[in-house]
Amino acid sequence: MRRLTIAAAAAVAVAASAAVVIAQPASAETAAFTVVNSWNSGYEGRVTVTNDTPSTITTWQVRLTLPAGTTVASSWNTTHTASGNTYTFTPAAWNGTLASGASASFGFTANGSGQPTGCEINGRACGSFPTPTPTVSTPGSSVPPPPTGTTPVAINGQLRVCGVNLCNQYNRPIQLRGMSSHGLQWFADCYNNASLDALATDWQSDLFRIAMYVQEQGYETNPSAFTNRVNSLVDMAQARGMYALIDFHTLTPGDPNYNLDRAKTFFAAVSARNAAKNNVIYEIANEPNGVSWAGIKSYAEQVIPVIRANDPDAVIIVGTRGWSSLGVSDGATSAEIVSNPVNATNIMYTFHFYAASHKDNYRAEVERAAASLPLFVTEFGTVTYTGDGGVDTASSTTWLDLLDRLKISYANWTYSDADEGSGAFRPGTCGGSTYAGTGVLTDSGTFMRSRIRTPDNFPTS
Ligand code: IDC
Image (cartoon, rainbow, N blue to C red; front, side):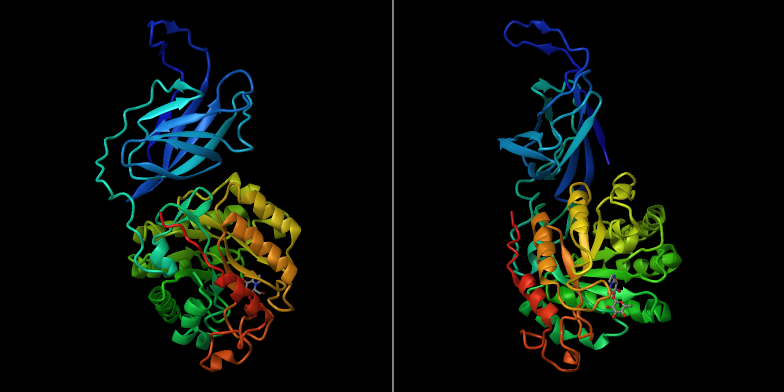
């Protein structure tokens, strides 16, 4: 990570025509530019604007010039316009007004590796803007070629977190919609070629979550067998162009640190085995409960480096307090995460809900949190939090409309024939060979299949 500082209006400004030296303000606005994350074809930049004047300002404007071959692909907490290689960033609705001493940040993703060569804030040259490291730009090489396949993975490629979104290989925000398995230890016969074919082609699912319980007759009873099973399901998802979410399904006990050594062993193995794939996402703790955010953060900061050592560019998702409710089910809020985030890049935070149990106050928190945290709904149900009961169609629809609007990815509990309201298939389906169509589905399965089948329209440039 490189940090460059721009002291706007710190230098002497010269009027071009008469070489008159204009008196400088004693103080001014400043902007600091940081590369937060970078990859082969681009980087994520962040600019922090600080009001160093003695009075409140009500708006600001930052202008960055990028070298030829580098372009801004997307931005957040700001609106941008382009004129040639120069990009003008203006505030979003909420971050234009800055009291004296206050700061606001915005971010962008760039295609290409060239860092800004010029900067202005509020119309004044950023006098001390540093000379950037020269970059060699090969025309056309910084942007991936158009996809050659039509599956979600063929189109979107390696994912990364950009700002609060999940972005595809073109650095454009996307939403993945898919299904979660039930416990692999209980529903082994539900995950086979026919059922995954149906998920990929009939359901048009982008994503398959592999729920590997750790306790409850899961991983701890036979680590190598469960690790092999997860790996083979990753391969089956890959063969069908779906993303695979590897879920370390901790539930009871709720403190993930109880399973820290198991997590390190498991994630070392699956990340080494799957490092070269571009369809794997890691979910390191399903639903922490009865544990503080500090405890979860400490766990995450020990497990993430194990994955990164093998698979540096994969997206990793961190569970949150109160059964991954962002703390709400524990009487807390996402503010504890915002003020004390996990010290890692390219990560997201988990939110779970059960539509018949969790309603407006949870939705309000998700909307609030989504402005500053990258969120992924790795599990939700259309029913109550017990996993059973009838589908709450109204609440489920409101939830999914919200997630669609915010481009938050999701996986539904469960792609199984469990005899409970959340199971998508009628009991007994997994004993047969037919998974496609609606004839085998429950109310929840019918509802979810129609939401997931809605075309994705992933951006490809
Ligand atoms: C439930 C299953 C149920 C099983 C129970 C205990 O649906 O068949 O008996 O777990 O293992 C979660 C958990 C998820 C739960 C689900 C529904 O992540 O494991 O599955 N749920 O209760 N969080 C909230 C709800």
